[in-house]
Amino acid sequence: MSASKRVLIAEDSSVIQNLARKILEFQNYDITAVKNGEQVLQILDKEDFSILLLDINMPLMDGMECVRRVRALPDSKKASLPIVAITGNAKNYTEEEFKTAGFNDVLVKPLNFDRLVEVVNQLTD
Image (tube, rainbow, N blue to C red; front, side):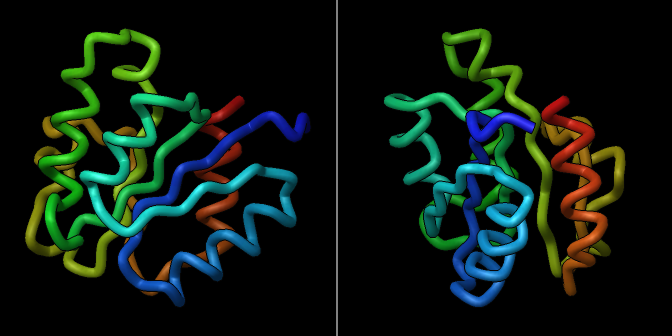
Protein backbone atom coordinates (compact mmCIF):
# COMPACT_ATOMS: atom_id res chain seq x y z
CA MET A 1 0.00 0.00 0.00
CA SER A 2 1.37 3.40 -0.91
CA ALA A 3 1.78 6.05 1.75
CA SER A 4 0.00 8.50 -0.53
CA LYS A 5 -3.46 7.37 0.62
CA ARG A 6 -4.78 10.32 2.58
CA VAL A 7 -7.63 10.12 5.07
CA LEU A 8 -9.52 13.16 6.31
CA ILE A 9 -11.23 12.48 9.65
CA ALA A 10 -13.90 14.92 10.83
CA GLU A 11 -14.73 14.02 14.40
CA ASP A 12 -15.27 16.31 17.40
CA SER A 13 -14.32 13.60 19.92
CA SER A 14 -10.54 13.73 20.48
CA VAL A 15 -10.59 10.16 21.79
CA ILE A 16 -12.19 8.69 18.66
CA GLN A 17 -10.11 10.96 16.44
CA ASN A 18 -6.85 9.82 18.07
CA LEU A 19 -7.76 6.11 18.07
CA ALA A 20 -8.78 6.19 14.40
CA ARG A 21 -5.61 8.13 13.57
CA LYS A 22 -3.33 5.60 15.30
CA ILE A 23 -5.07 2.58 13.76
CA LEU A 24 -5.05 4.00 10.23
CA GLU A 25 -1.47 5.33 10.50
CA PHE A 26 -0.47 1.77 11.43
CA GLN A 27 -2.02 0.77 8.06
CA ASN A 28 0.23 3.38 6.33
CA TYR A 29 -2.48 5.99 5.76
CA ASP A 30 -1.63 9.67 6.00
CA ILE A 31 -4.16 11.22 8.41
CA THR A 32 -5.49 14.75 8.68
CA ALA A 33 -8.06 15.39 11.42
CA VAL A 34 -10.51 18.24 11.92
CA LYS A 35 -13.30 18.95 14.42
CA ASN A 36 -16.26 20.01 12.24
CA GLY A 37 -17.80 20.18 8.77
CA GLU A 38 -16.74 23.77 8.12
CA GLN A 39 -13.09 22.74 8.57
CA VAL A 40 -13.68 19.83 6.15
CA LEU A 41 -14.79 22.24 3.41
CA GLN A 42 -11.89 24.61 4.11
CA ILE A 43 -9.24 21.89 3.87
CA LEU A 44 -10.87 20.19 0.84
CA ASP A 45 -10.58 23.53 -0.92
CA LYS A 46 -6.77 23.29 -0.67
CA GLU A 47 -5.92 19.57 -0.48
CA ASP A 48 -6.85 16.19 -1.97
CA PHE A 49 -7.81 13.10 0.03
CA SER A 50 -8.52 9.45 -0.74
CA ILE A 51 -11.44 9.20 1.70
CA LEU A 52 -13.40 11.25 4.23
CA LEU A 53 -14.56 9.83 7.58
CA LEU A 54 -17.35 12.08 8.77
CA ASP A 55 -18.93 12.17 12.22
CA ILE A 56 -22.66 12.91 12.03
CA ASN A 57 -22.96 15.00 15.22
CA MET A 58 -20.44 17.87 15.16
CA PRO A 59 -20.61 21.54 16.07
CA LEU A 60 -20.97 24.30 13.42
CA MET A 61 -21.85 21.91 10.59
CA ASP A 62 -23.01 18.34 11.11
CA GLY A 63 -22.07 15.38 8.94
CA MET A 64 -25.35 15.28 7.00
CA GLU A 65 -24.98 18.92 5.90
CA CYS A 66 -21.26 18.47 5.22
CA VAL A 67 -21.71 15.41 2.95
CA ARG A 68 -24.31 17.31 0.91
CA ARG A 69 -21.93 20.27 0.54
CA VAL A 70 -19.02 18.00 -0.50
CA ARG A 71 -21.22 16.24 -3.09
CA ALA A 72 -22.13 19.68 -4.50
CA LEU A 73 -18.50 20.84 -4.94
CA PRO A 74 -17.65 22.07 -8.48
CA ASP A 75 -14.49 19.86 -8.56
CA SER A 76 -15.92 16.50 -9.68
CA LYS A 77 -12.97 14.55 -8.22
CA LYS A 78 -13.58 16.04 -4.77
CA ALA A 79 -17.36 15.77 -5.10
CA SER A 80 -17.05 12.01 -5.73
CA LEU A 81 -14.69 11.36 -2.80
CA PRO A 82 -15.65 8.22 -0.83
CA ILE A 83 -17.34 9.39 2.40
CA VAL A 84 -18.07 7.19 5.42
CA ALA A 85 -20.48 8.30 8.15
CA ILE A 86 -19.44 7.72 11.76
CA THR A 87 -22.38 7.86 14.13
CA GLY A 88 -23.44 7.03 17.64
CA ASN A 89 -27.04 7.73 16.63
CA ALA A 90 -27.58 5.32 13.73
CA LYS A 91 -31.21 4.92 14.83
CA ASN A 92 -31.85 8.59 13.99
CA TYR A 93 -31.36 7.87 10.28
CA THR A 94 -32.17 4.99 7.97
CA GLU A 95 -29.56 3.41 5.73
CA GLU A 96 -31.50 4.96 2.84
CA GLU A 97 -31.14 8.46 4.36
CA PHE A 98 -27.36 8.01 4.65
CA LYS A 99 -27.17 6.83 1.01
CA THR A 100 -29.44 9.66 -0.23
CA ALA A 101 -27.31 12.23 1.61
CA GLY A 102 -24.27 10.89 -0.27
CA PHE A 103 -22.47 8.51 2.10
CA ASN A 104 -20.73 5.41 0.69
CA ASP A 105 -20.91 3.53 4.00
CA VAL A 106 -21.77 3.92 7.69
CA LEU A 107 -19.77 2.97 10.79
CA VAL A 108 -21.61 2.88 14.12
CA LYS A 109 -20.05 3.88 17.45
CA PRO A 110 -18.57 2.34 19.44
CA LEU A 111 -16.28 1.92 16.45
CA ASN A 112 -15.23 -1.55 15.44
CA PHE A 113 -11.68 -0.74 14.36
CA ASP A 114 -11.30 -3.91 12.24
CA ARG A 115 -14.39 -2.79 10.31
CA LEU A 116 -12.96 0.75 10.06
CA VAL A 117 -9.79 -0.56 8.41
CA GLU A 118 -11.79 -2.90 6.16
CA VAL A 119 -14.11 -0.10 4.94
CA VAL A 120 -11.26 2.38 4.39
CA ASN A 121 -9.23 -0.26 2.49
CA GLN A 122 -12.24 -1.18 0.31
CA LEU A 123 -13.14 2.39 -0.58
CA THR A 124 -9.58 3.55 -1.31
CA ASP A 125 -8.52 0.61 -3.52
